[in-house]
Amino acid sequence: MRLVTCRVNGEVRAAALVEHAGAPHVVDLHAADMLLPAAVLGLIQGGPPVLDRARAAVADALAAPVPSVVRALADVTLLAPVPRPPKIVCIGVNYADHAAEAGRALPRWPSVFLKAPSCIVGPGDPIVRPPTTEQLDYEIELAIVIGKTAKSVSRDDAMQYVAGYTIMNDVSARDLQLGKDGGVILGKNFDSSAPLGPVLVLADEIPDPTHLRLRTWVNGALRQDGNTHTLIFDIPAIIAFLTQQMTLEPGDIIATGTPAGVGLGMSPQVWLQPGDAIRMEIDGIGVLENAVV
Image (tube, rainbow, N blue to C red; front, side, top):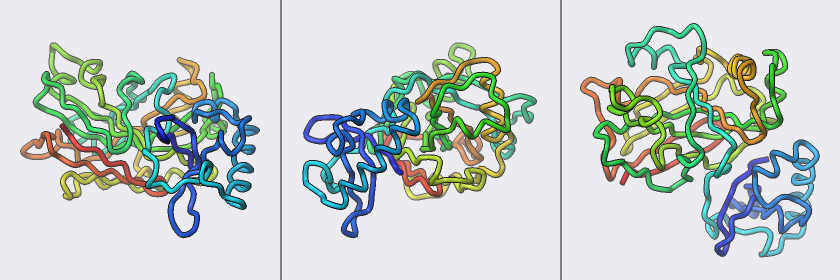
């Protein structure tokens, strides 16, 4: 199942993205079954029983569609699939080619930082360049959404805690991130610095996340072209490491790192400018597009 958060007639709703009558549609899950949560976070927190009920509601809705439940995708506005997760945990320098372009040694342990949930924007929303930076950069990342409370999880059991996957653009102000007066907190945590979406693909639809192609285009030019099989620390390693230190909660997002091709690593370096259009695509998930203003 592919979950989305969308705005319908001014209301924010959890929905399933489906193909119906040869075109993409959304099924409003709460309208289809009033016992289902109206938010994607609530669906995730409900665990497998609630998600199974949602699958059944989708099947019933498509068997006898009514306009208030099944709507054309063109008639709704997609938002970030999890607009306000409990926390966003990011793994830095997690592809060897990105470490090389950034002039960094391969890490011994995952490099971890946090992004505030308020950084999140959705598909099509603008990325607002702060007046404090001249070095705005992009990073495509496979984002994991946690499905159940995880603490001291073993590597062997780690994948049982994954609800699904989406795309995150870890937008970065490099001059703040790498400068003496800024640091990671300022360089990574400005408004609109975490575009997320377009969908949350549940884990059963991506049984092998270790071979997913990630690509970024800026103004139509291909900049990043990587694959998750080159992660330094794979998903089980990340979850096992993080949960030795912290409890992960349902709805938490883990951004797993970016491959080479960011503006920082180009020669000469190239920074995002107002008017630039960014397109990101990960196999099996879809396309996330945002423009800089």
